[in-house]
Amino acid sequence: MAVAAYRTLTLTAVLLAAAPAVAAEATRAPYGVTAAGAPVEVFTLKNDHGMSVKVLSYGGVITQVNVPDRQGRVQNVALELADLKAYETRANFSSLLGRYANRISNGGFTIDGVRTDLPSSAEGVSSHGGPTGFATRLWTGTTFQRHGEAGVTLAYTAVDGEGGYPGTLKATVTYTVTRKNTLRIDYRATTDKPTVINLSHHAYFNLAGDGNVYEQTVQVLAKTYTPINARKLPTGEIAPVTGTALDLRKPTRLGGRVSADDPQIKFANGLDHNFVVDSGGRGRLVPAVRLADPASGRTLEVATTQPGVQLFTANSFNGTLKTPDGRPLDKGAGLAIETQHFADSPNHPNFPSTVLRPGQVFRQTTEFRFGIAR
Picture 1 (tube, rainbow, N blue to C red):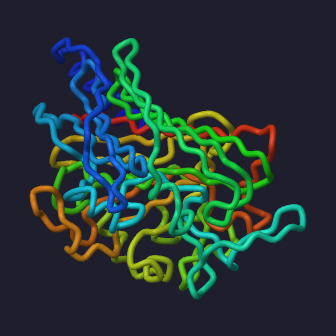
Picture 2 (picture 1 turned 90 degrees about the horizontal axis):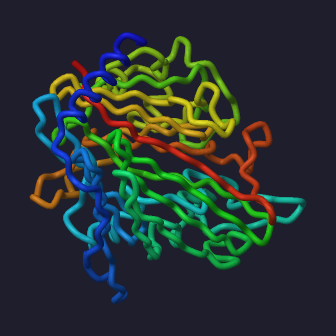
């Protein structure tokens, strides 16, 4: 893998050096109006090497990530829905996730002996912050340009009790398109009461630009994972991937794993699992996932400071969701790569803690590093 990685980086550097010199820029424009009548903006971020990303003030949704293939053809590799109404209808699609990404069971959690009840399903499960999670909120954006990079910082304050969570939480999320064709996302949050927090992003990627991801290869740098039960909740165990369909330590064709005869795959009808990132959660960026599309030559390395990463192969897509050009999104249309703390951590003391207290600062950084293989 060291040789392959070197070749990807080398070719990327050559392409970037040959790219026309253009100024980085961050612009804003109207995108639409929510069902409640609130205006939404789209922020377009371009570096000085031709990469561009589009982000909405609604839910921090990433609608586009435009990067070149080995022939230099630039294409959107993020799944995009038709319009704002579609994003409002399909909660959490390619959006920010909070206050707590992924699932919390038992109808809530307890901190310092104080019970907090969350809006939950009939089975007692709260998912991605519930019906008023960060994906549904309007964020205030501030754009910037510096040293060939462009970005936007989104800010939102969740008041005490919003979504059932204690504490007024002040959050910022900064999206930066760097000169190295990387999308960097920096998260920051503070609270005035003890609470739990797990911020992430649910962007779906397809390096081919269309079709499904099953011919693409994935490598997950994780020796262990958190098994789920039939309700897709973690059992509380941290188990080795060895001998399972979740052993993705070497580049593996996705299509060969989403249909594997493995109980874990059957529970989720594909991949919908949290992997424990090797050396993750220690405050420094480490590689977690490598994705490659043999046809286009595009590659993606995801590095994170988080202890876990959830992979989801769009198992429930059935063609009802449409792209702006009317193309239906079917099962396997994209791969969500959600860097995070583990699902249901507040109810599993053996998982890394997600408690945030007054005076502490929650920080998380994830980089999506795009390149081209030989």
